[in-house]
Length: 334
Ligand code: ADP
Image (cartoon, rainbow, N blue to C red; front, side, top):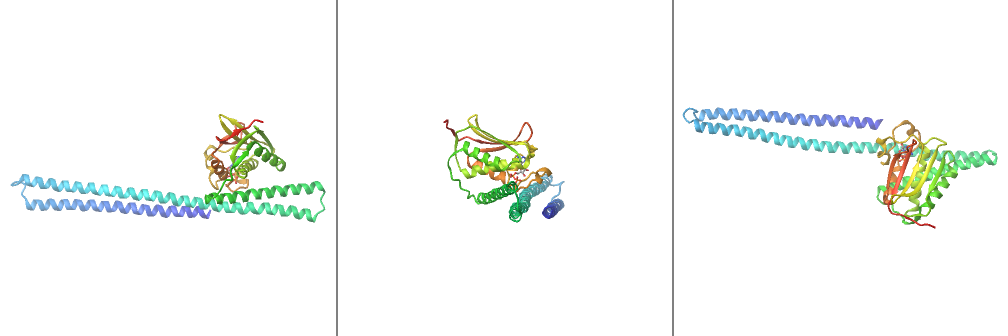
């Protein structure tokens, strides 16, 4: 709120300053035109004193023409210089305004991010601590104990993913994120990732449709992060009990990797923006879910570093399809 007001305050001061400069310029213009007119009148008077229009009509008219031509040239010069000057001022103002707004927007997003991160870091730590203290203090039966432990593992997984995202984001910021590229059995990587999620995430039905034997050059850790970011999002933004499908297959000589959910979907106007750093869709439903706005930004960066593309599409049955496409892969039949 504070930042928003700062932004509005800056815009107000900026408009006043710009308005003043433009009005001052127009006022100078008016003064110059007046002055030019006065010069013309003065020169005409002078001419009438110097030459008689009846005795020397030709010279008189030549001089008169010159005086009028001079005035026209002055007008032309004032207009030209004034318009160029105004044009440069407006162009410069637009560039500065854009840069300032960009900075304000970024710092607003960063502030939101810091608040989200603080919350996201503290809440799994608090939950894990509470679970462990409960286990220590109370004599619980094995089933309850396992439930608490399972919950603790989930919370630490979340913490782990968040830390990875933050570290990676700062590496990308300094362009230092290095890929450790090796041949990766994508079918195995996605299958193992989904199985791991199925074990710990019982709130949703996670299904996998994987063509076996797909290989690609890539970084195992980064590709694993792509899967967990997309599936964790599907879990966050789709209702409990709904189905999340993960597909890996070949189509039109491209490797397709999809994560499909049955949530509320993403409006068309947001489908590009969600990949921006710190960006979170502003509606209440998505705001209720915790998040930092880093996951999809990183996912896109990783996919692009692997020579692929990512897009968010509508799931015809309701929800979202995140579709990744890669051109460089191979299928090894057993
Ligand atoms: P975070 O989830 O931490 O907010 P992300 O970068 O992963 O950040 O996602 C950016 C935004 O995209 C989210 O805030 C959410 O509004 C939207 N989003 C991402 N995945 C989904 C999804 N599967 N369904 C609906 N909205 C989504």
